[in-house]
Image (cartoon, rainbow, N blue to C red; front, top):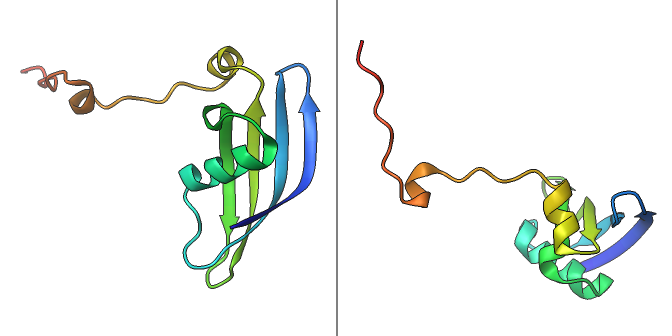
Length: 101
């Protein structure tokens, strides 16, 4: 996978780098996890500080464009990014029964 960064903007207010560019790959479009690993190596930032916004691919083409953010600290990432929902079954809680009428 080859990553070409087209635009990198430092957002001082949110303490992050906003990155856009192009990915060249063979086979299937890379997953967000795979892309995070490669982008972290390219930017020199820890993998958990990178948030992939979008990967725009086209069918049958080995290229895609991307949008991603690289935060300065874990605290800033937690403060800005929305929390992911955790499913009740995955959290170990019993599913709630519907109220009887």
